[in-house]
Image (cartoon, rainbow over all chains, first blue to last red):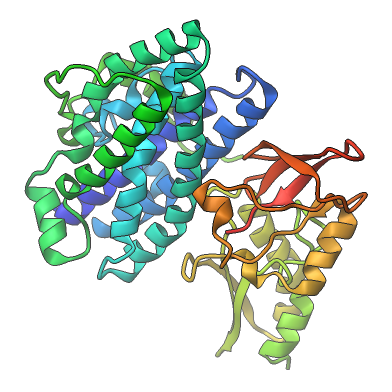
Length: 249
Length: 163
């Protein structure tokens, strides 16, 4: 197995799927500012996805470029965490999903900034500035919704109860992750859990939200096992380039 | 035959597509210009990873410089690089003044990390210069800006985020 290719796909697919989902908020945000914020964050994610997938393509000897990887793979070939493919739902669902991801992305990008691979470190350093800003936004909304009205509190608590187990994939360690860490160009995500936990507990306390009882974690995204939502998302995202493979703008 | 400095001077004539009051060199997007054998190599870096203007910027640079390079029998190559990561520190004081005159509150210094850690920095209204302003949204009309409002003159304006 090409560990480098697999590892970069994970990074790229997380960003791609989350970015695509956030793009679906265009014109549907609860207020204009949030419409712009969610799509801005989506744009950052797509930008990060392009960089990771380009690097992934190179890792398999330039067989595929970023577009081939994004638009011409089937569901079972995607390596994103299941959390990223959870449906947008209502605004609270999207915020909780984003918060759980951002709190992971910040220590991830910080750690990857120390990669012994110059290209990985460069993308990570660039992304780190963005993920810190994203986390500031999603954390502020966690507090605002959790500490808001009775209705916003109840809704966001429910979102958290449903989505928290899906964070499992983010910290899943396997041979690919360990190879990345041992060789020094990547990190073992298991080592990021502590920083994530710390921010999670801090924010939930501030938001007056209750951490749900521990439930079995959902894993499988990293080996291509996905939930139903991803097939619909890919169908919409891929239909044009798959129908007209050589189409140019 | 033009040397690297001549090409850099020509790049000063390529405006930023989103903020046309600044050119791509003043924005800090152009990182390096080199003449390597028969090729003029321009390295550019994005302000934000997903900046949708990057393709337009590369196209603009090619459109303006390719004919000039061809005259000298040279090719023009525009390459995207990520390191070192773009920072608002690369905007000169003169560029910041132009931004303010254009109606965009310029960024402060990145050594001032308050914008990232959650504290709100003091942002001056580009219209009436009041410092009694408030953050409306962390995200503005483009990825590199946040949205503010002046509490004195009521002007809504963009603030160039400090990164």
